[in-house]
Each structure stands twice: as structure tokens, then as C-alpha cells.
Length: 199
Image (cartoon, rainbow, N blue to C red; front, side, top):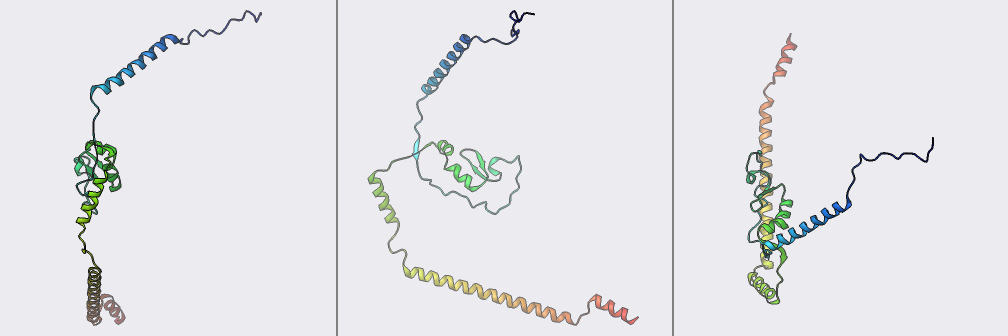
């Protein structure tokens, strides 16, 4: 047998790819993607969002603290366990995550704000300082006020201690009087033992 005339392996069952055809398809797909990007951006003008501002309300984290609640899967989101955000219509399970949510990008965008802060001018800072000085009335807090508050707190503490001692004495007196009246009574076990001793 001559090895020079060996017939090669038949690989015709494998799929053959036309590189030119697939290069053309890739170019068309890239072209469509770039066109769609430009179309989507040019459809609407860019949204101008307001800069971040201070909250004008108090965040309520403690109203449902320590309360038990029956949770059902069919209840609306606002009545489920956790903290409900009415802007984003979602429920967050704990207070730390709720604070993260209301300070987060998604929530701020739903409110129409960007995550950028407006840069304050020198005049705005000076006006802010003046308003804070006016709000804080001079002489509103003195050492005399502090001394009075400390004295009042000490008196309240002494009163609480006195009431506690009185309650303790009353309790002790009631247990002593209860114990004396029981000394003269025979317990059922004592009666049985005495009856057995007679026989």
C-alpha cells in the first residue's frame, strides 16, 4: 500500500462560513446601531433637571417602630411591612435602606432633580449666615437655665426613688401580713400526714 496516495479525511459535513458575508452583516449592524443612537438622542431635547435642594419635610422613621403588623401578600404596597415610597411606589425593608433610597439617584430623578448641587455665591452664603444668626436669639441659653434644668432633673429623680421605696415597703408589708395569716392554717398535706399518724 502506498502512503503517498492517501486520501484525506472527509470534512464536508462541517459548516463553512463566508467571511465576506459576515463582515458585511457586522458593518450593517454597526451602522444601524449608530443611527438608532443618534435618532434617540435627537428625538427630544435633553431634560433639564433642577439641582438638589433641602427637604422641606421631616422623614418619618419612628412612627411604626416597635409595632406589630399582620403582613399579607395581597395587601397594597403602602400597607406592607417596611417603608413605602409613594414617589417610586416601592417598599424598602429597613430605615437605613429607606434613607439610602430617598437620597439616591433614582428617587431624586423621579422628583425631577439631578444629583448636582447648585453652586452658592458669596452673597447667598452671607445671607444664610445672617438668617441663622437672627434665628438663634441671643441670650436664649444661659448658665442659670442649665442650673435650673439640672436641679429640676435631680428633684424628679429623687421623687422617682422615693416612690420606688414606698412601693417596695408596701409590697413587703403586704407579703408579711399574708404570711402571718397562713401560719395558723393547716395545709392539706399536713392534714393527711396527721390523719395517717393517728391510725
